[in-house]
Image 1: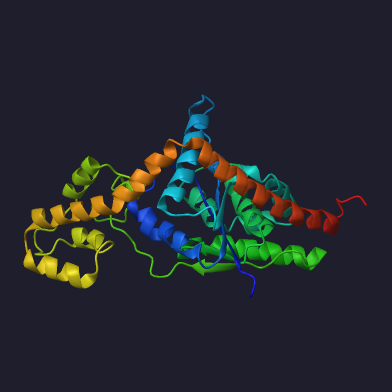
Image 2: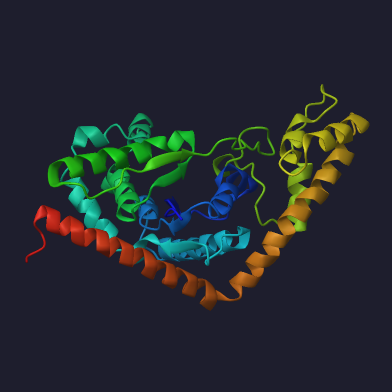
Length: 322
């Protein structure tokens, strides 16, 4: 039986996800764990690029968001028996490798990174972490021998930088790193928010993935509708995430112009979709010891793989004294 390919993905701990996050990527991650030897890490080092104050709020927020993301991924269906879930900070070899990559990479090359260019374009003064984070990401990917990295089209550059870095290291020091490939998530839903724009926290137009029944009712009733159209397109677009086209077309045809009825049906379908995951999340939150144990075990697996790779790297570049 051929060896399974290794899949790796990371997510920044940035608060409660919404249904756009779920249908945009998270759902696919759950499905992919059955096809690959999968590892998912919580990128808490990457979250440090947004440090704004040292008053305890930053620390408490990062701790809470990190735990929430772990609980979220377990609640939506990541199975610790099939996949490795770990904290980026539990693999210190990553920052060691990132420093080595720093010494191989030129400043002009990193200036091409989208996040840095966007910050400059918007008149911001990026910190070194933001400038350098593509190499930390490259280290995340390469130290775990990842074959594939699932990304959206707009994130493809991250994998390209990892490949360039691996190729440069291999050319200078000899073959050490696999060349990862982007796994572009096809047919990914672009979920509209309640105002018709793309669902995004920055727009304040989201529906939480773990919303209460009351929150769902409020959000759906707030969806902007076009009075010139007999079918409320924004309502239909969100509804299409849960029901097949034939069912919806019949439903919306039978209820032309009856926006309130259609929103009420969507409310019921959203409640039925959210409730099982919300209940599981609540159960997990009461068993913090189990969640932390999953992270610890995952961290041990990821750390052992990383150390094996770093021994090879240190020997190749002359850091390993024989």
